[in-house]
Length: 552
Image (cartoon, rainbow, N blue to C red; front, side):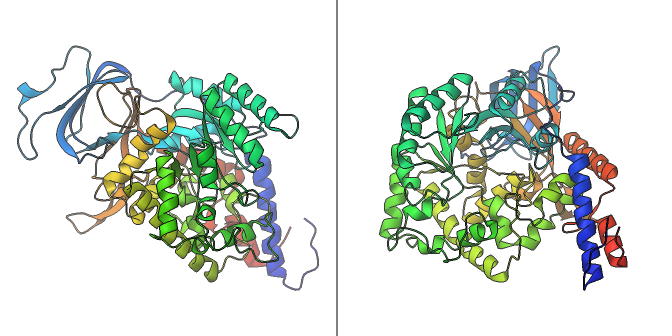
């Protein structure tokens, strides 16, 4: 690489090698198209009969934990759930479901069983992040996520539907997939009229889309999309961007039939009482990601105050409209604590080099807005979270539906791990841990129109379970793939937790082995690229050469 003139040679060297590493990674790690998930080589079952013995059950409905319980599965359906004793008392074998020849039994004494988790905002990787489907699927399954909603089919609707079909047949190791498609995808020109919008909606519904993801459109086209989606029997979600929210906010779209809102854009605007648009600085440019995210963090304080008359008026109307809020708080957490999210302990072993490069500050990659993120930005975002969380908690308290989605793959937010962090943020917002589990399971199932099939451990439903050795109600962090740190009886810190088994459709997956597979993928990718995460955004070779002041 040719040296260029610079008054600060070491700084130039650092920049040069950082760019070199980025180019190498783009060349070696990022596929031209998203990689297909391989055929399933993991999992045991399904069985004629599977019996989960002696578990403590958290069933996802909002009921308290109960145990010991025996849960009987035939094929992929729950056929019996039976209380078989009392804590601290030997189990009377005569009261238990009897094992038959060929049955599979798991002794889950001392363990906890929950319904399979549902990630309501799960992008299945992508070319820009260099994240193959197998990597994403195994991170999800390794964290107990058995169903995801892909909110835009960014790899193409055909691709998403193909993987949905394979997952439904358990031909790959993947969560169950609901395929939403971004409005206008696949159309050869901009959709300019309500009639064109209706035609497009009907076409993607016929292709098999489960729902639509809508960004910035005119009010007339938005109304047509939502009306036609309802006629076609498919669901809708919207990220209300600042480009159109002055005309169409979350309350407007809910009245028109929108079933789910993503994130929170459009909600504070519905709560305005003394303005009609947010207080943009006069040099604001939406295409500047730091402008966009920086000002987003100053929006909630411009809305009606919590518990005020207008605040409740909007909240209660959304509940009456059976409107679902999928906040994805975790994907914004870096805005209130940048240093925390970029140094999370799992990055070293679980974040692919290509994804790490995508996360780094730059002006092109979505969500990489750390151009010069300041203390003032973080303080504003902390207040933003406080006001946002107050709305979510009260929405839940008054009967509204709030679901858990991670929006992973952006802003140092990693698949699987981000979902568990979202659960912790719900707890911070005021949800009881049992309410958190319900939001992660049954509420997601309701939002997808699948509550008769998944979302709770009940007879007749699909056999989707999360099994963990520690009590998640006492400490949600035991659900992380890295577990939680605990002092043992020898006064030594040890790791406990991590999901032990993920069971989907009656098939038992060793969750820890799935995560071991991911670690191997990451290590192999690092070896190919001679790459190691040693400090934020700087590879080991670049850091070493930058320190020496050399360049090539």
